[in-house]
Image (cartoon, rainbow, N blue to C red):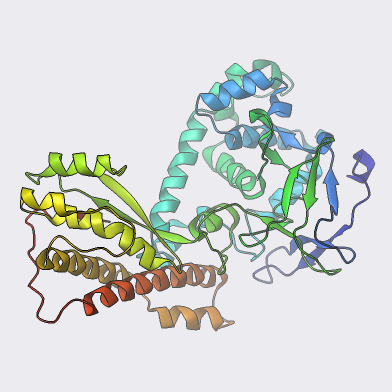
Length: 430
């Protein structure tokens, strides 16, 4: 990189062992000297950065491709696959070799679950929404693969330099999947740049730079060209450097980068609530939720540490969904915070359903929270089992906190409160 224009920097490459003795070590970027907040220890010039605009050589074509639902990641993966076939003739060979070494592993040395066996995903994420997330992402990658030939035909001038057939004939799906996941693990989303430059592959960037949800150090477009790392805090010589990963929950962090951040302030679970379409009052209830800027199938976010807030957000929707008398609908208030319910029996019906739902979610996991904590602490635990346990432990804590919040509301109800008046058409919770 230095021979190709990398200016003097204040970083160095270090290594730590892989997850097992058989695996390659994990390389990471560390400070080569003591650094302060505001320092720029690394700056990478444009000629060492891969963007869609550079790959296609035409920003208009780059915008056309992405507007037509072909993701930047798929285009970048295709470019790197062709470059890899060029062997030592490729300018990007050292960068591609490093991506091959990392194999979608985060700084925890565990591969993204997208590369796990289906049986491992099913076993280790039983009860967790992560299982469906993995399946959905793999289906998305498959759809991207099926559209690769579109890139070939639209960008014919670019691919004239490669003496190969169309992408679908040159690369099997498994090869594309690995390339896509490698790109996904290291791509940087730049702010304040044109569309064809917004996703960039940066040598010395991720995965060599660790992603963290609590730092505000960022790789950003430099005013005079290239990309620079700006620190938000002091770093001692030898300490690893990290960059902000954006407001992503841990399911995304594990899928994209093979990491779980236990201090992640953006971590959450989604609770989907839907009005029952068989309800005779469905249309009237739908009109009310739409008037309050909600949907007939609404996602509510249970943020870690903010479960009470999520409960208060859900309660008005559930009160309305449980109403059986059309005259009671006017008493539903979509106000923030704890408010009076429609009636004691309606309130009990809402709270009973929430308890049933949250207990059901917790019961779907094959392990207890205490067993997960023990597995994380045990040095003999397999790496995939440990990272899965870290994820589901946080999910269970969110669900337990939400259940405790519901039980607090129940405990505050007057003694002798009316029995729940269950509707035949209860809302659907997922």
